[in-house]
Image 1 (cartoon, rainbow, N blue to C red):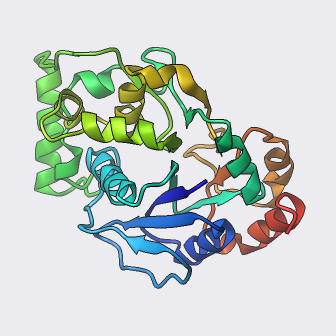
Image 2 (image 1 turned 135 degrees about the horizontal axis):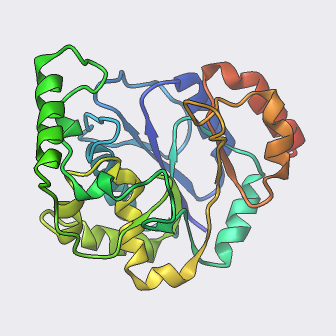
Length: 279
């Protein structure tokens, strides 16, 4: 069972090292994309590849999808069985053999809803035009930000919207997919494809692009669940976990990953290793 870990990171590199150390195993490979705005880390370990070119990733922009596709393209060349897309602030909460045994039974592991089933993913995110890759949402004083946010609102006020060419599906960004599913995604993600053309100007397209491709394919019948625990009961979420979450992590019997951790999470990850991963 060859597993490729596709990791998106932009900081918390002490924790990234802990994550790599925890997942190190026979026939495991790491492909890491570091946001172009961030410094490159120095990470030790076996079978690690940094992806280039690096994308200037903007939260909610299609650049997040672009970075994920680059990770996929790099990894598929090496012919793995499964591809786990995770963030650099994830951590495993079970022994590594648990995931290998699960994947040996087959299936696709992705969080997916039909459009309308998730109230936090409204149709407006994808129906209307957004330009979030072209400005810094946090820099509200800049002319560029004010122009593009004005343009977004103006287009929406004039009811300028996109035709929706396929059923839409949404869900969390992270997944574990088979080589055949990843191959299908890459085939459907060629420049100018209907999926790229539609989602390029969406909002949080990374939470619908991959789900929509899978949901409109034969792989939809092979979905087995979602493998990442996160606590969204706080605002803003997800919660940065600490030792208070250990009982919840222990009870998450169907999850392999949890998030979110930081460089300061060393005490918690040590407790996870001892109590949950039997190390």
